[in-house]
Length: 202
Image (cartoon, rainbow, N blue to C red; front, side, top):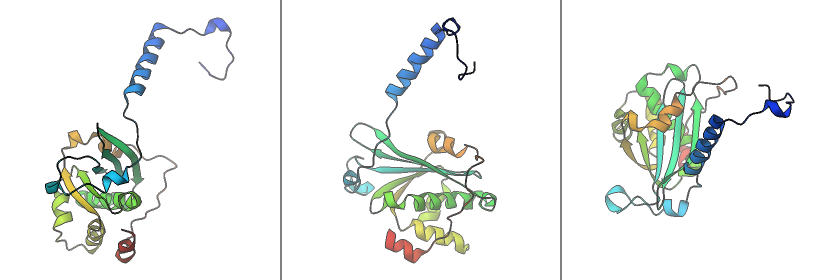
């Protein structure tokens, strides 16, 4: 039915099915975990993994990449649950989409951290990824590829621990990474890295 068309009173009917749908919508809205602002005071008190008793204040960055682009979610552990802080994404251009899977995953982490450096500055966070090989690459790099080494050098400017998780448990960033490109998505790439400038920022 066209919503802009004026209806006579008897044409509109609120059915039992419509009421059930409305009740379900209200229930889901009431139960949804709300997006919070990042609590920097708690985040800056987080200790290294072998020194902390709990995860209160710990910020987690969940990243996943496909040829479409990189998608990520930032969350924080508060007193009663882990709350989402931000959901975001970057669409890869035609050249970036042709990277190998290994290079694509590393590039996705680099782009996500570069985009969120203002939030992750001077805090220890947990980087959650579903590509196990990235953990070794980022902590003990030994790559002949100069460009990839520059990405890793930038990534290592941050203070983080790596958590490898199975794809089945990586549902939010994985789901975001399957979202297709839209007609108005920008193909601008901010993939350059200047380590000297980054040190000043991070």
